[in-house]
Structure formats: structure tokens, C-alpha cells
Length: 223
Image (cartoon, rainbow, N blue to C red; front, side, top):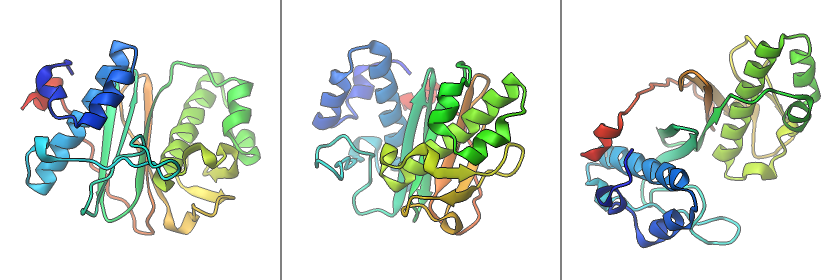
């Protein structure tokens, strides 16, 4: 999406400060695209103009406005994630959720596996080919990042404290050493962000998920 005055006009003063703090143009553009996408779609859901959508991004730890965005007075929840030239938004009503999008251009070396995977997960990918192991790793990675975002705790939950289902099985949380994540009240869904990327969404609910994916062109966000 182009970095235009029209799009920047949707940002609050706090969001403009965050936008300006990014040193690289591509990082500013990703932030702006995520906020524009979020305000456009949330505005459509709430029946208001995108310019009238204001998020509360208060951090639970320090009270500064750099936490995940919320919509005051609404049960609608959202999560924004971006990587490379992909910017994603997940929306759900009445439950906490997290979205993660990652570029899959890196190889899943032993250092990454040890950092992100539990013992059971490392055993599950040990005999896979390099390509299959990399694909399995990024599915684990995006699923775990989405789960941690859904709790609002982020990396305060160690990646290795979570064990997910084996590659080739439906994505689910099998065990968790984190009290914020109960496998019985957690749902995961893989997404299709296109070649060279992986993405997952997590929702803190005991209900089954029905996920609908849409692609938006930059032009669609200009209106």
C-alpha cells in the first residue's frame, strides 16, 4: 500500500508517533498498511467511518500505547501481523485471538529448532527431509506466536513450554506449561498467505473455528 497523506490521516497522534519512530520506509509502510486495513474493516463491521475508529493500545506492563490494539466498548477483537510484503489482520467477535505471519525463507537449523520446539516436537521433525522440516518448523512457529499473542503475554511464555500436534495432523495445542493457555479452550487454524510465507491464527475458545480468508489489494484500501 502506498504511503499517502490520505492513509496517514487515519492515524491518531499516538499512532503517528509510532509510525514516525520506524527508521526504514518499509517498516513505516507495513505499520501504516496494518492500521489502514484494520480501521477500514473494523469500521465496516461497526458501521462507522474508518477515520472514526480509534484503537486503545495500552500495554499491560507499562501503560504506554504500544500494545496490541483493542476497540473500546466493543466485543470485536483483532490481531495484526506482518512479514516481508505480507500484512494480515484477523477479526473475531467475543474471544481473544492472535495472528502471526512469517517469511519462510530461512532454513530451520538446530539453533532455531532448539529455541522454538519442545522435546516432543523436535522428535516429531527429526526424520523429516530438510524441506519438510522447515515447513513443519514454520507451522509450529506461527502457531505458537499466534497463541502467545492471543494471551497478550507474548514471549513471556517460552516457546518450548508449548507442544503442538505432529506435522500432518490438524493443528492443535496438545500440552501447555503456561497457565494462560488451556488446550481444551484453545483453537488453531493454519492460513494460506502465499508462496514463501506461513501464517496461523489462534483463538482462545472451546468452540470449533470457522475461518474465512480474504485477500485485499492496495487499491481496495484507498476508499
